Length: 356
View 1: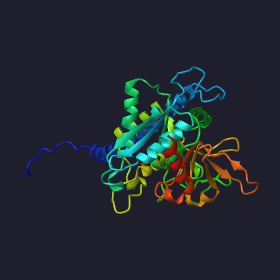
View 2: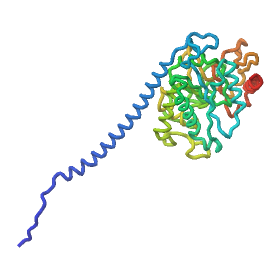
View 3: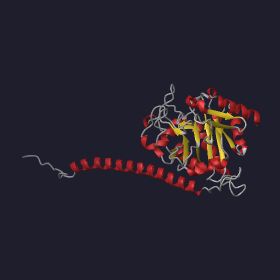
View 4: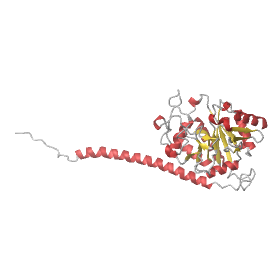
């Protein structure tokens, strides 16, 4: 007599379940990834829309009249604040003095120069985002004090190699006339003071239009020595990128400082953000013949035409064709590692040291 076995009914759905469960898991992961990407893209789009709205909300200036900021005396809606990040272990007092004096000569309130101190005792190898975080902290302090509206224009400069060439009104008008909420100068060598055009041979592709750049190339960074934005936009953007996003690394194309694996110059981060968020972030570009550059990044090959006029306290350019002098952009940025090569810059620093 054969033994009797009680067999469970055959489950015909098991093979289907085995196939469906992994498929659902993959689909779920894809959906989550899509939501994250959509969220980030939406966040980028939201940033752009808010920043553009804030930029357009800035009260437009009246026609230029002396050094008056706007038609309402004392109004802070059309003011310019200058922030200069300074390392604790770096002595840049002479540079700060020259910058402050150049502002004073052009009708700026010297009290509108704000020092943002950060720890640089380990040099560039230990800098990373310290400088950027210091800028953010300074912006947040300004907002919390509620003394300055979010539409206040902020000019961030490295004090040791920047000279202001124009009054606040001219810089405000120039910023309002260009399309980008956050505006950068590009790497040194982009601006040719002889032809007054951009060059792409020294720092391409950052000297060209953003559509030509799809990734971060070695050594090609936005120059963080000078940039412009409104108080609200810059604070919101930096808070989002530093406190609510993972910082980019080599995986995203950043190039580490030589001898410091995993450490990056702050310009590397800005270069990454530029490619990710354009047109929220833009390069100071002539665009067409009607636009003027705001920021002049002076390269070593530009020395021959540049002059400093000790009667006016202004830089000028000699036209080799007729001997006349050309006007230069409002903000002059010299290469920090080679300022001594520029006799006009040394003359300017000496002039400002002696006259303020």
